[in-house]
Each structure stands twice: as structure tokens, then as C-alpha cells.
Amino acid sequence: MSTSPLKFLWFLPTYGDSRYIVGGGHGLPAGVAGGARPATLDYLGQIARSAEQLGYIGALTPTGAWCEDAFIVDAMLAGVTKTFKFLVALRPGLISPTLAAQMAASFQRYSNNRLLVNIVVGGEPHEQRAYADFSDKAGRYERADEFLHIVRELWVRPNVNFQGRFYQVENATLPSRPEIAPPLYIGGSSAGAGPVTAKHIDVYLTWGEPTPAVIEKITRIRALAAKTGREVRFGIRLHVITRDTAEAAWAEAERLLQAIDPETIQAVQAGLARSEGEGQRRMLALHNGSKANLEIEPNLWAGFGLVRGGAGTALVGSHREVAEKIKAYHAIGIDEFVLSGVPHLEEAYWFAEGVLPLLQKDGLWSHPHAPARAEKSQVEVPFAPPATLREPVAAAR
Image (cartoon, rainbow, N blue to C red; front, side, top):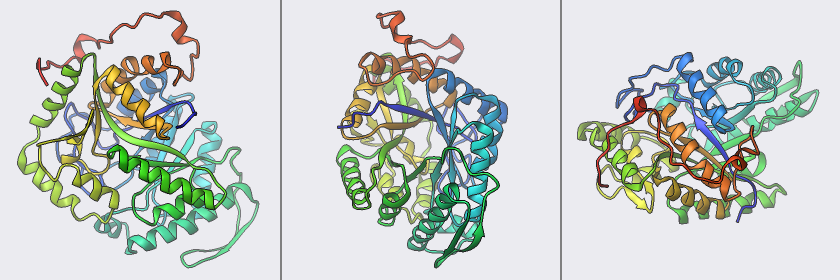
């Protein structure tokens, strides 16, 4: 069981947002399911500022041909936030390791150490080839190993030389090394992810699979890291639908589900079937392209994965039910939760004002900017958003 306090990160939808599930991701074109809110800097900044105020420590920004560039967007949003951290998704092999180390060091310097880096090796060969990368999956993990070795060396050493299979670096230096090396995150169920994690990564992320599968990953990665003399922290990437009652939460899930037509599901599933990613294969196996039996274990719903690549599961339930599910994940070793919702702005409030106070009362979480916040009142008041943000919901699940 983990004894570390819980940390929560949100998500920046740099492909657009909507009151419905927006398709795309992991090799799919953006907007498959429709995105009514463009990914403007004003809107993304609104999400980032709100999340910062609500107590999320940062946000994940995706990478791929279907969204805006993560490094550029987050560098611009750093100026409209104060302490908020940016988990920037980065693909090794598409950029020089020396340049990547320099970009990260600059981000750290000018953001006051607010960069986190999410390593994405890429699981869709057709998308990788669009970026001029024709390597296979095993090769991408081997290349990531060399890439991260060089980057980490540059962050702590004045001069780096390296000769490897993929990279040769001679007398590499940075104009200024980071005061704090950016923590490294990775998610990957493929065999190659384990050794890379054990050698280089600070936080290993899993998608929201059933609990036994998550336990297996944690056990395996922890053992690999121990062999290298390192410890790895663990996080999970999930969507969330939380409401004052379970009936209201499941009615919202049903609203999202009914908005998806069978043709869209078929088209998206055909695209995702091309993926080489083991994690994506596991996500697809949770629903097999069907709207039936999507609650794969209590309060874990696989509906997002019908039209969205990548993370395809959501925590669904009352605020207390979602809090208890989070506590169960924490008990098996998960410390960090990277969450998102529909729409991202409104759902950030539902979760932060509905679930976080319960976790704070249980002594598992504290607001990063107001540690004494819970002492003002011991009375739990159900959260209701402003009338303009409310959705009509059915009375039954």
C-alpha cells in the first residue's frame, strides 16, 4: 500500500473540446466525434487556470498529428499560470536528444521549474512514418533508452559524449543546466517499456485497466526498477464522470454513449486496430467495439474507448463512490491520477469540488495552495455547478 499523498493532474485538450466525447488520438484524425470548442489559447488557459485554483498540480498535454504541439502550447500557457506544472508529451526519435535537453532546460528556467516530461515512443507505425520515422516498435524503445541517457546526462554534466546504435554525440553542452531536472513519466504495456522505465523513469503511468492488470504492472515494474537500484512511482490515466448521486453520473455516461453512432464506432475501431501498442490492444479488448457491458468492474466504464484512442476508461459514480475507487487504487500503489472529463472545464469542477474534499477529509489529499482549507467547515455540501453548466439527466442508470 502506498503511503504517499495523492496528487491529481488534469488534461489539456489541444485538439478541441465538447459536451460529447471527442474522437481522435493514437493515430486517428482529430474530431471524429466532433469538437464544438476550438483549442484556442484562451480556452486552454481557462482550463489551466481553473485547474490550478482547484488544486490540480498540473496537466498532461498530448502529442501526435491530431493535436497541437505540446511543447509550444505549454510554453505559452506557463505565462498565464503561477505554480501549475505541465506534463509535456514528447516522442524520442523525432528530435535530437541534445535539443530536447536544451528545450527542457529552458522551460524549467523560465517557468520556475514547472516542467514534467511524458515519454511517448509511439505505437502507430503509419503515424510514425508521417513523421519520417520508419523504425519498428522494439527499435523505438531501444532508441528511447539512448535518448534518455543522453538527456539525463546533459541535465547534470557540463560535457557529454556518447556512442550508441542510434545516437552519436560529441562534446554536447547546454547553455544552462536545469536547477531541477524535469521528472520523467512514461506509459507503456509493451515489453520494451519495462527496461526503459527501470533505468530512467520517475513515474510509470498505466491506463485504467481492471485492478488485477494494474497490480501486475506495478509488481513487474517495481521489480525491474529494484534490480537497477531505483524506485519508481506509479500513476494512472483515466477519465472521470462524477455527480452528487450515482444515478446522475450513470445518466451522464448514458447520454455520452447514446450520442455515438455505430458507424463512428466501426470507423474508429478499424483505425485503432492498426496500432502496434500493447496498451491500445488492451483498451480495445475491454469493449470489443460494443456498447454492451461497458462497466468492466464496479465504477470503471470503458465507453470512452469506443471512439477515442489511448485512455479509454472512466471512473463513474457518485462523489463518494469515485473517492472510494481512488482509495482502492492508492492502496495498490497508485499515487498520481491524470484525469480528464467532458467537457474538460466543467468536469474539472465536478471532480475537484465533489471528490477532492472527501479525500481531504480522509487525510489522503490536501490542496497545494491552501492546506488549512478543510478546517473551515466539517459540513459536506453537495456540489452543484452554475445553472448554465448543468445538463438534464435521466432519473435512472
